[in-house]
Length: 222
Image: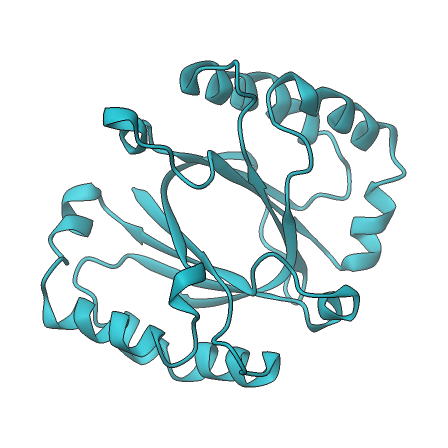
């Protein structure tokens, strides 16, 4: 399967509470009508994140399909037009982006009920090819991060190589998704030697200062 991972900010002038309520309770009505949809998950940025200012995104949506052909078949359909029309009710469309990814599961544990999910957006180091970046992330960095004991689940979402054809540059080269029991467990991980090893390795394959959001996951279509 492949995954469409979209990221966005709420509509200008809309409160975080109203945005999250609409996204979770109203928007799924149109999304679940998409033909070929296999799974649908929303991850909402935690309200506490706004105490320090605006996060880079208010959340991400992940939608799985069998393949890119199933995704392309949606173009021009009334169901897809309805999704786009409804997005305008709560999303600032100019902030919206999408990467089509292939997932690599590093730590295959269950997502903890009521836990938190960290979403980090990655840009590869400029001197690395896409192939070298993806290989290093998967084969070298992934096992390092997988050793952090408090991580319950860890998935790498690699932007598909077809996104780079004809000189195109996707917004992100991938997203690292990690699940924890709670924010306290996340903070505890930062003091572990395993976490220190992960941070020391990051300059080997990614650009500095990767943005991230801490979210709570809502599974709409399991």
